[in-house]
Image 1 (cartoon, helix red, strand yellow):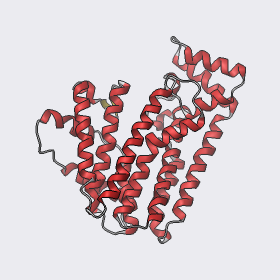
Image 2: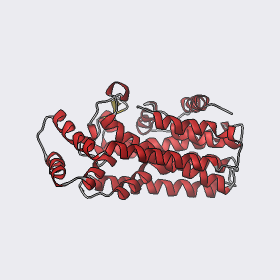
Image 3: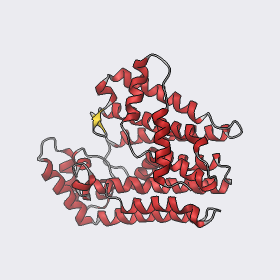
Length: 324
């Protein structure tokens, strides 16, 4: 079996060789730019990893894996435009380098290209593959809409938040794993189990992100701590604090949520202090552990030898331990 790093090397080699041989260049240059910004390529790697559980050779599914990565980067391009974000992975975003129209149109081209690539699979699997991919793409749109609506609400429930991150983040990880299994000819049961592995990994991953933004080590995390607090982002921590807080704590939270002028470090310290009083960090860590255990339980049920599950087990272990 391939290691995770070998799968990543295989994919990056395919990505580097992928050519945009159509015109106009002004449409495809932003696409190439987005894909050149790097990233962990976790979605195509997960897809190849799932495939490799059942089949030794993974090169034949590289075009579909490329389609998944193309689609993911399309969502990032449009997210950056909607958020008016200036940077992505330390580089200027597409709408900053070019303009809004370029970001919209090149993003649309990436969506079409992703369907072409995913649809390049064997015709006997095409209907199942496209049905799953299309459902996932629609769910991600739903998740993004919920996320935008939550910006203007202070009454978001934990259940609503978990549903949102399942749609916005987890379903594409789940889709990647299930597609890898489908293309390898795995049983329906195994493909569904791998989908659930992806859902639980995705939920744990996002909750860990929320946690690290407040409690991570800035030297390790790679960015300033407290960014979510400063922009009033509805994270798992803030949502639960608003629900669990007493009247005095609610007043403190509402004061900082409505403040238009403040010293950033004072706001971070005040909100974090409420989190600490409520034990929100421990509660979040417990939820992360629960989702990791659920992912492991699904993995255990796969009808393959245990040694073929080790790569995915490592993914779950690294998710628990990650500090970035």
